[in-house]
Figure (spheres, one colour):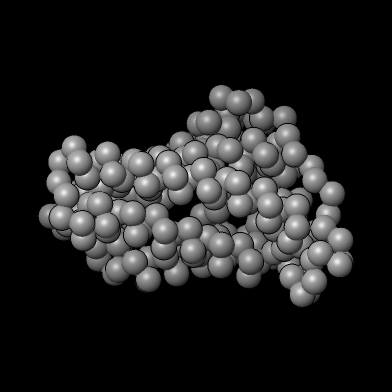
Length: 225
């Protein structure tokens, strides 16, 4: 299998590889300095998104929800939808990795980033990346450019070289659209934040601890091409 290396500075795998490669094994989250830089990058992205939103007269945590609910009701509905989406996505990602060639290739490419990392490190990176990305792509960009454009940009920035590229871009774009849909339906960013953090944390742990066998050609079919 040809090496698949993350290329975009936005994606988690790319952040880990680019920042850690100077002094440690490329892509490793096991180094304190690498984790600090990654978390700082996402914190700055979130702060910048908040600052721009406030300057434009927006609150990046809320919007006018299509369901017409407000206050505590919007937060509770958003949280419930987010938890459901998170659980379904975590389950689906494991099925995809075991049965789809592009997902297995992506898992193999990003797995070195999580090897040796502690639970606390994975939780910190998962939370920081979820908060930074949700504030930027949903909280700031959805009200400005809409669900479709913000999700397409989110997907475009999650790409890698090699056979997993288009699969992961499509997957990220769909997930961005689902996060944005919860936000625009309920008017609360809580659900997307919870779902995104849970998915990131669960899948980082799966990267670290799981090493499934590649799917057979009979099962992979056209997806192996």
